[in-house]
Image (cartoon, rainbow, N blue to C red; front, side, top):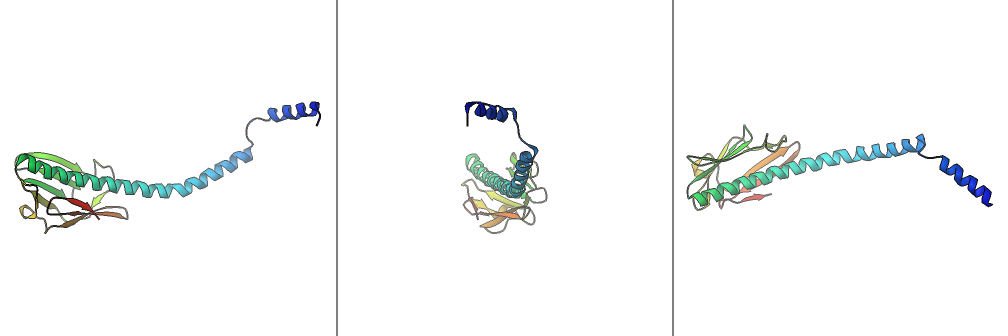
Length: 163
């Protein structure tokens, strides 16, 4: 190839800037296929994260109720209102915290326990089911979001463990 031909070939290559419609269509088809594969997987990850957030919020709420009972030296009630998807932490004279699963966590998370649950934490930090309508300890509490479920276990020492 002579210098003149090389210069003309390079000049014609630079005149053609941009992409052809065929190249753009191929890129768009590949992107659409990747998005189609990724969206359902991403929805599963988001649901799992919401359940994890709900679990951690309930664990934190129970831990706070236990800590408040020890700090105040009085019985603190921890009540799960299944119909309202709410958890209340309160004493005889004071509301300590309200956790609303519909509003605070912004998801369609439902407590999968039938009926309300009231559990008391004694001034020594022990969970005691006799003050309310709780069953014997340890007890299970579950959350559902779509088809996924997370189960927690409350122990007599006031601990909340995941299962």
